[in-house]
Length: 52
Image: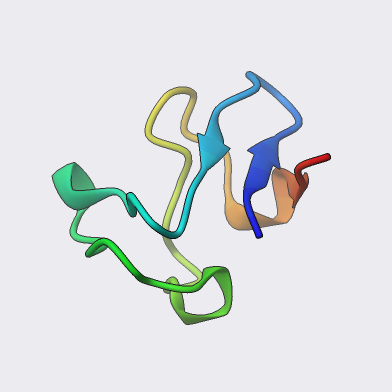
């Protein structure tokens, strides 16, 4: 499942991960550290919702 930032619309795709910020491809949302922030706008994980 993908997760979308409610602030800026960035979509986290587990298949892609966020390698620029230390999140390897294939990393499930639940396995991302709690201190990870949106690479686009900098808000925390609590500002994301499951993408439609």
